[in-house]
Length: 75
Image (tube, rainbow, N blue to C red):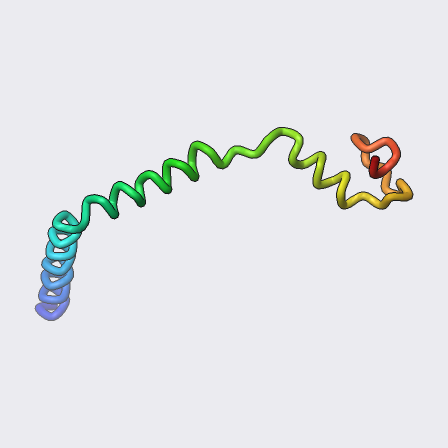
């Protein structure tokens, strides 16, 4: 039981130390990472025609697949 308590205490101390060290880190690197995440979240929306274009590309040129949005295969 004492070993478990000691292990938990050491894990908590390590977590506090790592958190404090991260706070002292490079603010510019943090800002670059935040900007990258922001760009991924806000600018990663696909255009509405992306799926249709992919389906048209994947369709047989002979029009064998009858997709409801592709009347005669590729254009």
